[in-house]
Amino acid sequence: MSRIPLPYNPKILELFKNPKNLGKMEDATVTAVAGNPMCGDMITFYLKINDQDIIEKASFESYGCAANIATSSIVTEMIKGLKLEDAWKISWKNVTDAVGGLPSVKFHCGILAVGALKRAIRKYYKNKGVSPDWLRGEPTFEEKQALEEEDLAKLLAKRMKAAAEE
Ligand code: FES
Image 1 (cartoon, rainbow, N blue to C red):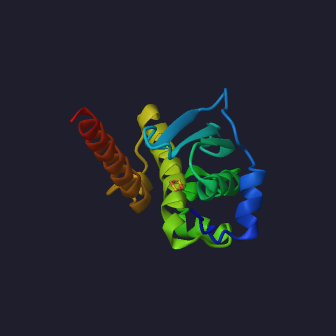
Image 2: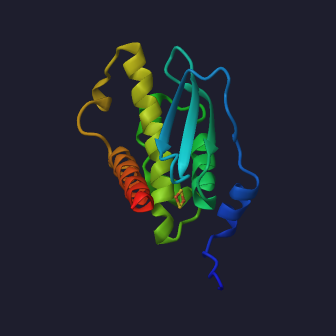
């Protein structure tokens, strides 16, 4: 069986081979996970935030594909030094552009990376017991997509388990 390689651009391949900010952060202020461990597409974001709500450091761990690793890596680069309010405005489209574009079947990998970032920001304020205006309202597109993907993965895992028991 032959596999057709995905048309990843050189920037993605380089970030995949040499990702920046990969690894657990021991002194993180907040961590957040998106994706599903059962299907393997899982990402964890670590943020170190100072008392002015500025991201001092960001790192990630990913069990996703090359696109997920590349987009997560670029997100950690993009948000370093930003106020949380500005980091919140980053969309999956900005991230996709920053890696030089993604094949459409891989859009979800970048969406998951931004979903994890947004979860981390939300969690930070929840832990603090503060609710800034810009954080109120509907969950963002990326957060909704991450939830949908997690639900889908759970459903598939359940079906597989049921099929195995038949
Ligand atoms: Fe699922 Fe990329 S993270 S295919």
